[in-house]
Length: 162
Image 1 (cartoon, helix red, strand yellow):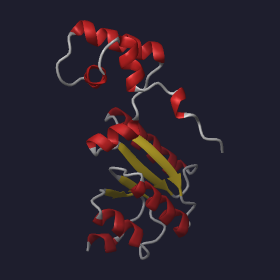
Image 2 (cartoon, helix red, strand yellow):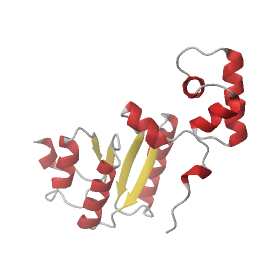
Image 3 (cartoon, one colour):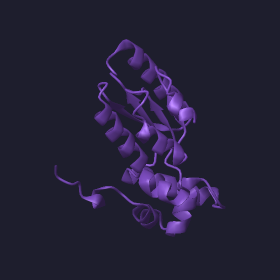
Image 4 (cartoon, helix red, strand yellow):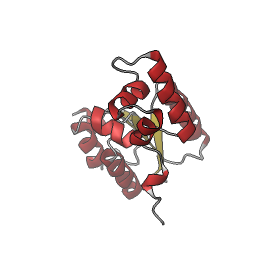
């Protein structure tokens, strides 16, 4: 897979340059923090819109420590039960300003474990998992012990209550 050139996406530096302000002022204007005159803020917003600027979620999460993402590991997202659950979770996540990363385990433990590990590495702030096993839950214990809240869907796992 070819890697996209990072410079194709406008940066905060590009916005600041286009608006004729410092990077710090552009950041305050776009991040809605600190003091910026309404005239300067408007110039920055117009420059950002003209350039097609979008905030870098990864950079923001590195600064804030919050990714605003939730992981969903369903057994079969085409099954009506899981698709309805996914729809509800997705709507609520969106309403609360969270992004949702969806994976499918196909009721295979190794796929579920891989998905949970990848979501932990992505630093999700919560996990919703339909566990394939109530006994082989080391991956879920790892997530719980690292401070990630877990909601179980469709099955209870008594070992996680220990």
